[in-house]
Image (cartoon, rainbow over all chains, first blue to last red; front, side):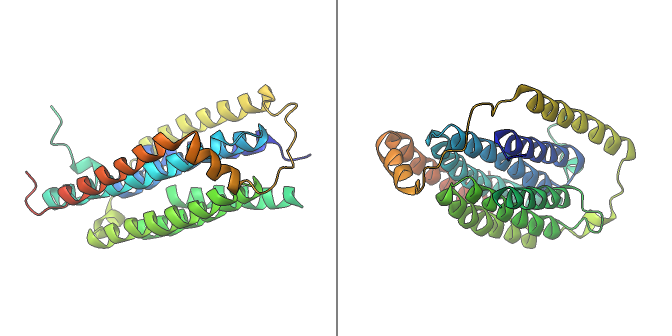
Length: 101
Length: 167
């Protein structure tokens, strides 16, 4: 059976679900953040596959933008995590409850 | 031949993704980060199979290079020894696995039934980097310039957030 668009989309869907599982399952902020990156990458894979099989480069430009935005997001997010750790001495979501009513 | 490479890279991507999220041998964030590097590298292989050579290079440079170095620096900065001592909530794990497993089953089943790739043959066009550059600097010039402002804002934000006395 020849590898087609569906195969890439299935890999992308499974990778997205893995990222979702990581965000729900793990309680460490850093690992939750890595799982978010995994979900972004799954979206990238779907976009590149669509772009390839429709013979249209717009999807690849979109992925280029997503990678740049993800880099910016990681810089700000990690700075936030470091600031939070300085204040609470913990990178565990269960300890970060100061916004709870 | 390409099909074999697809299966190899897809398997590696998913296996390393599992190891990022639920490594049975270690709960150390450094291990997760290393497996994330492997995931991203094998995904760059998938990009090459899709003839997105420029994006494969950018993926390795930006993600495996810059982003992961940032992650490792932060892991080194924080003291995460206690992570291994926390005990896991069994009911939470079961609920998460069942929930996400059903979402995955729905997605895969839908994709298998929908036949999205029907009639879309693999095109034979080669050398897309030049065309990508063309389209990026003509049609998408404004978003490209706005993106540079976004990077500047992110830089200022990161510096502000890491100041000692955060107000």
